[in-house]
Length: 214
Image (cartoon, rainbow, N blue to C red; front, side):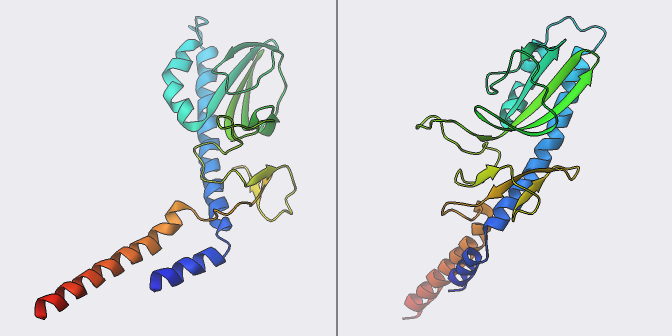
């Protein structure tokens, strides 16, 4: 009874707030990790002993990048010289993106940029896929580092929206618009589940004691 009451209350008190707050916290962690990643790439390509083999960075960071949805583009004198993978729909010429969130043909990406002399280094973190046409293989879902349902829209709105998202530095990035039926995080359901489990154990112990004494 207590678990049912708690769960019912949880579902009524705008659980999308918890989902979006969790999303915001994870985005900030990924933003910091992306900045570190770009600095490491910059250190590689600007080192005095750099031999032009930028593949070393790709191989050493492959597992890390894939887990975080990170990609890297390196432009030298305005020309694309290296890309970490084909997750990003990139341009041959420098697309001159600033920092923040950009919308590319295949998704929304958080961007970090470093400029060193004639080299522009872009680190991109996939936030949500954005395909023109969807099928069972191509879904407009969020990166697997997040728990937001795909029905939650990500749009460039304003700071006055109900759920604005800011960068670590306090700059407005975009707004999230809740949608769909799944409005609880998995973590939010652990507690009522635990109460149900404890209640079941108490009930089993009660029946055992009743049958033992009868």
